[in-house]
Length: 88
Picture (cartoon, rainbow, N blue to C red):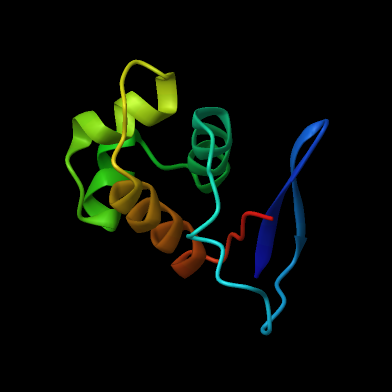
């Protein structure tokens, strides 16, 4: 699979590393969430369903319209990781 890496130029695909650190504990920005979601072709509702979180929480993070609980960010990160994307 491929992975997502945050860089000054945005996110880019990179090879999956089996020994990668657990990244759900790292901060994911709204723009990183949105770019990863779009790369997978997922709507905000689809991501919410896959992560098991409320749709409005995805919207709040994706578009920066509100505060998001770190547990929700972890759930979103796990959903991306299960789909083969990794935030670095």
